Length: 192
Image 1 (spheres, rainbow, N blue to C red):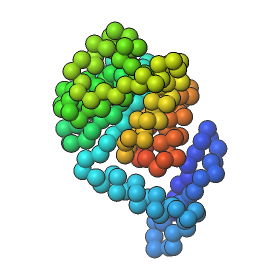
Image 2 (cartoon, rainbow, N blue to C red):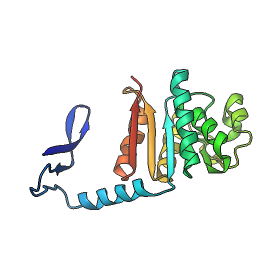
Image 3 (cartoon, rainbow, N blue to C red):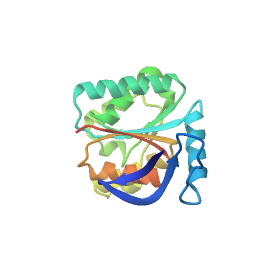
Image 4 (tube, one colour):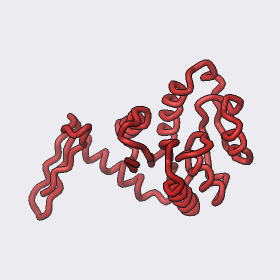
């Protein structure tokens, strides 16, 4: 039998665990909602078209950016909608390029603030993106605070999160934790 537990910083978290049997022995389930949560995740995975959020680090090697772009192109070609934020380089930029290659209508970009507050290279990359959500109400927030709120909005709008990050990225770690708390299917790629 395998005991699957959620781990946080190398220690057991206080979340539910599931015993996966290798034979016909009974399954031990801790927590009242475990089966329902697994059923929801399985239903999400089986959906033919999903709303997939792709967020991550800006500091990526070009090979990682090319892989993200290729992955995003493939996901869109399968009928999925990609949700990300703006970025002139890194994960979000690669996701935008990949979706734009395949089907711009399947791309949704949620900005932490307004287009006018983005650097000119980000503004240039967003030319031709048909579905951009701006937030003038966050114009007075710091970019870091607006980005945290934006990540939550992106996660709230998706079925699944794919995140590319390093172990030291507190903002992205917080986003992943939020996605797990809200029962999204989460795929994490650590870059370090």
